[in-house]
Image 1: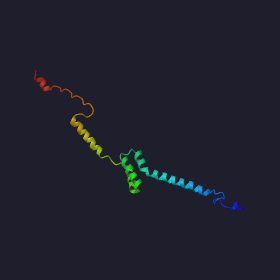
Image 2 (image 1 turned 90 degrees about the horizontal axis):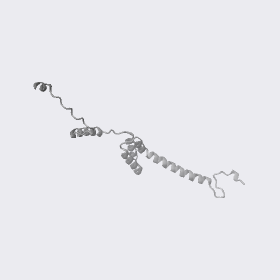
Image 3 (image 1 turned 30 degrees about the vertical axis):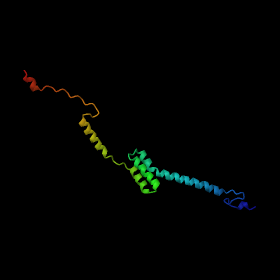
Length: 130
């Protein structure tokens, strides 16, 4: 027989095709790995925002979902930029000023204010009575 000289990828007489089976498993595995890598890359902005406890976490999530469903990369780039840079909270100083004015106006600042000290008699009035 001359079967010793036939390459291994040639189909045998019994119908077993090793190369077909190997390539099917390899292709399915490669598709799964590419899918996992794609979704991992797509979740990158959300993981960045979650790790940094970002205040615009929901905006980053919405932009990442829009990028996933519309296949517009500009949404993903915007999500990465929003997650990467902390937007300064410009309203915090204004809130602190408003709270201080409100507390001053109502007389309650959240902590007990000390009672006013009794006024001492004026020295001129104390000597006039003698």
